[in-house]
Length: 257
Image (cartoon, rainbow, N blue to C red; front, side, top):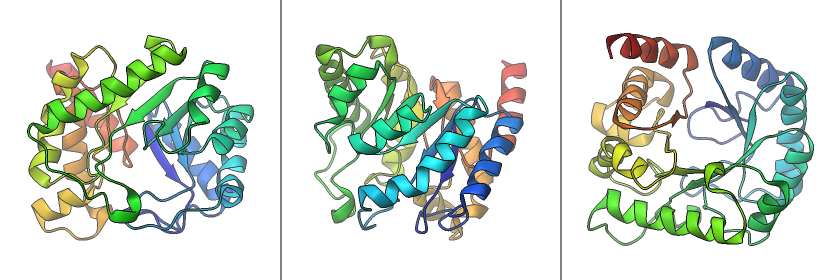
C-alpha cells in the first residue's frame, strides 16, 4: 500500500502533493514500482494536527481519487468521515482506511455495509488532539488485538463480511518505541486472530528516536527493514512511502524464503 498524502502538514511529506497533478503522477509511479493499493489521504493524523473541514478534505482528495480510479488503480481513501468516504467510493475508491476504527463518525459503518466496501480498522491510543495520550498497556499486542477484534466483530454484526475487514495495530499512534517494535514483531499474533493485518511503520517518529535521524524522509532504510520484518512475521499488507525499495527487499526475502 503506497502512501499519497494530499496535505500541507503530514509529518513526512506534507505539502509535496497539494497539487493534484503531482499526487496523481506519484500515485501512478507507485503502481509502476509495484504498489497494489494507493492510499489517498487529505487530513494529517500527526499528533496535534488540527481537524480539516469536510469540504476541504474533499477538495484535496476527490480529484486524485477520481483520476487514479479511472486508470484502474486500486485506491483506498484514508478518512474518518462518512461524507468523504461516500464521495470517494462514488469516485471509484475501493477501500476505506479509518484511523479511528469507525469510532469517530457513526455514519461510516452503515455506509460501508450499504456499499459492501472493504475496511481497514486501525488502533490508536487516545486521540489526535491530545497527541494520542492514554493509559499504559499490560501487553501491547494483546491489548491492541482485543480492541481491534472487538471493532471487527461489531462490523460483522452490522453486516460487513469477515473477508472485507483488515486490522492495523496503529504503529506510532501513541505507542513507545518498544511498543511499536513489539507490534511489528507481533504481526503474527494479530493475524492469528483471524483477519489480515496491515502494518504501517514507514518513516514513523519512533524510528528517529531509535536512530537519531530527525528528517523523516531519511528513515527509508529502517522503514524498508520494518516492512520486511512485518511481512516475515505475518502481515498481509505493508503501508509504505518507498514502494520501489520495499518491493526490492520483499522480492529478495521471498527468494530466500
